[in-house]
Image (cartoon, rainbow, N blue to C red; front, side, top):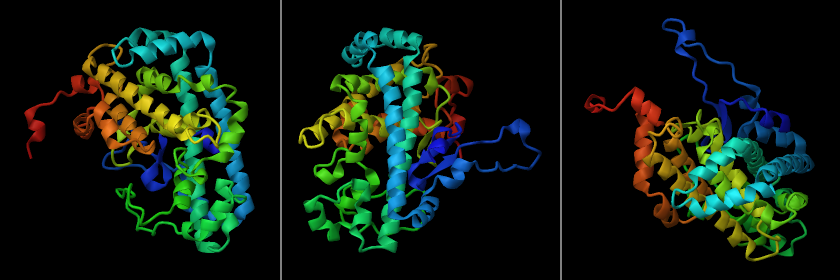
Length: 391
């Protein structure tokens, strides 16, 4: 599974609504026969990286197998964190990241981004973050599948449900466990369904921790102890990942974003750059302090907030100057959607996102995407005319 997730084809991306990795492949018109569309054979990743397949696997593996699988994903995630650290912790790059931090809200980040592009840092950082995000997404989906299987196959086996939290020794968890083992009600398949954000009637603290793996929870069982302990060797100092929010924000201008497109029907970005949300939260989580520090979740969430504010400013700056040659091919509308997803996944208040990226801008981006205009180059090729609005 680790080899599959690390070698994903560019067109296979994680779709949270589908609980699976889906293909965005569209057959070129030149290869289609007249009046015939030839289907593309699903890749191995599409076949095995999906909720039902993982549930079937975990029924066979059992609780101990689930523990081993989770440990393999954790080790793979830490390996990718080490690659992220290579791009973030170099001492010669810290002055450049500091210039980005100070200038991200004023437009003075552009010269620094050119220096980082020349050094090849931004593309390398994005590649490592995408691999890390995919591994963490698969880990979260595996945990969710484990929770579902545990509830159906062994509803009274507490230790099985607590494996992913590494909390068997917690007296508080054990005392309150019976009320936690109630997963949300199953719903019919609906790709447009969004789980309720503030409705606690369908999910419990333990189930939310198993499925969302949020590092920003108030209670100890909502912190990811396994990942934090495995990453201890990578995080030698909090300074190693201090500039993560601004590095990922300025990476919005990297060339790696140019082939990216947003797919509204899948709520994802191809080639999978939207999973940097998982990477950002994980890096913030492991570098924000000890697990038993009550202020660590606040520091981690502040790192996500710093990314949202800086990335919103940087992308808006590029949007205002999108006719410039260096910005013309960037999918700035898709980047708006990615920033919104990071804010929502990071449990930031909607009011915070509104201050930095108003909903009017997000709605306008969605309208442009619906019209097939994701870059300034698309606007040049097919400019808007009144006829497109005629019935």
